[in-house]
Image 1 (cartoon, helix red, strand yellow):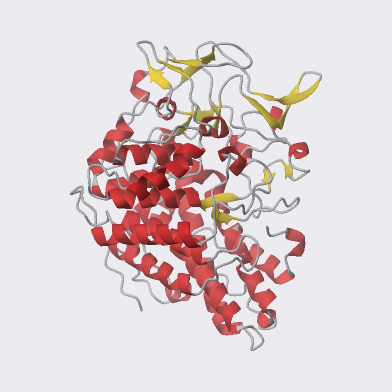
Image 2: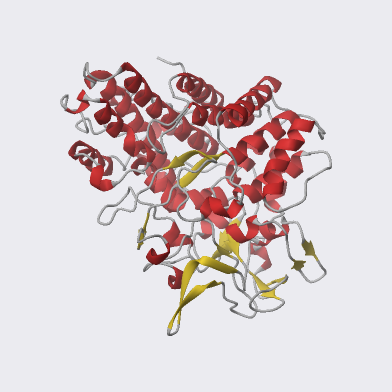
Length: 558
């Protein structure tokens, strides 16, 4: 973790500079941020210069945009009264989370570029070549990952490797998705060569972080440029399998035994994490802390002066995916052995001994309440760790220290299985089934013995990574080569209010789910299509950078 009290004064200057460059990605970058030649004289100073690429630059994305785009647009969760543009799939150029995400990703790009330029220019002779190479690789890694988010959300976007060239070049325009994917894959391959097998400091990226991203990049890139044919590039599928297997076999990472432990405080930089954003509980500071739990916790009863997620929860569609929850004539009912449900969402009557709940006259361990008669919410548990007393004092309003997963080993197992499946209807490949079941059985479910299909793997990914900002990008990956299937999944989802009732309270053994009768049926489903699938470029950006309206061109590396 990066603790504020250990951040040198030059890094504080960097923090201040960041706040001045968030209006427009085409603005001149803050060239006075950590450029004092006296600062880059030691290995520690160079590493300090890239430390905030793990937190501050991602803040506007992590704050609310991560779940608005990654889960609300994907249909795994919804908000009944807020963020409705993303829930109802009519995100516009003025939707706040759209602008926040765009801004955050280009801040990552801009500050990564600046870090590369400053290290190359100012690093003194006492800085070891390996540290200089490592720090530059960190910045290139972050830039490539930011472009992965950009191209998957907005399609064609401008590739910028040197922000200073923007001062004299007014012709910069968007680059084609195919060339963006080539650029970030080439970057990540180069980065992997300059990163160590073990983290230099807790939470810093390794060779396996980069190779894990390569597995992810190649799996998605296999569908890019397919023209919706339904077939993916076999060479890229083979590359995804290769890198996933390397990470599984060589990284030393391992799945945690219990899924819930992934989100129990303190869980930072555990054996399953390949790369996480590194947040710090930092009273008095803003932007280096994790603010997201403030918006996810269902009530102030389990929070720290925040807890504004009372109208957020799992969608009807999301609940229908869990094994054991069955469709009936009047709704759904049942229970599941899948332990991921309790660790991701809260059902009425569920106990969470790790979280303190305020009640009249005192407090108790959290028992998620039963409220309402025709509408309530299956509230969000993942990333909600409770009060200050539950986290060794490391929590306050909008200020939490636990990290945000950007990639876990579980994804490598599922990437391998999907890459082996490839363009086939099904596979019985023994290793693919073994790897799939590493994830599947960890949840408490029996081993899956039928042939693996794309639907089976897609469902597993949705359940495994719900509320981790992943589901939307799974749909975008599908959309590259089978847009019709992506639209079908989205348009069959129910995204409106319902009531969940336990068979007894507390300690229920099953639940019934009934759709709220007075809800307008027109808002239960969305209309995803080619005209609204990708996000529109934020209005403010289009007004300040009219070249973004021009047709995209292939990127030629300068």
